[in-house]
Length: 281
Image (cartoon, rainbow, N blue to C red; front, side, top):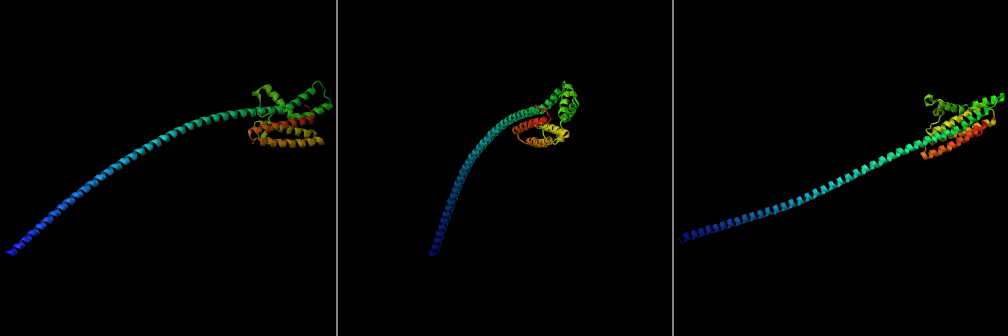
């Protein structure tokens, strides 16, 4: 009996100890599960708080970005309005400059036209004097044989000078409707002179003087002094031709000065030619 009782007691003790261990294990498991649930809950809470904070920061950043974009767009719009205003102002200024340029060009054209007329009038001054003095010489006189020969020789020399004058007088009397094109005019292109405006008027004077020298050479070419005079005068006229064409490529103000100098030199050449013809001005 004693051994059986001892065995039973040991088994009961083992069962009690096992039950206690099982209960302890279950308690510990419950506590561990509870602690895990608490940790998970705390982690979820922290994660939610962090997510809310990130969302708040991102919202603030988005607001700041939107404000920056709005300010940038407003600044670009303001700059665009200023640029448009500057463009309109520049267009107005350019338009004023263009009108001023056109007005200035019109004045220059008018000055060139007036200068061409002045040069042409200066070129014809001594030609008129020649014709008038010859007519006065004939008035109230009787022509002898020597006078007739002298007059015929003078007429040959002065034909290029007098003929355009006679034509101009006749044309002025008839009016512009009866004026045939090209009569009495100088063909500058055929004469080898490339000029316009006042330069063309100077070129016409040069050609007329060259024609007068041709006639003078035909009528009095045997005279050594006359031949030397014609040679030197032709050289002067060739230089003046070159000056007229060179002036076409110079600025307007300088071109006027060159034209004035050429006109003065042509006046001196014209006086020399008339002096050789026996006409004093």
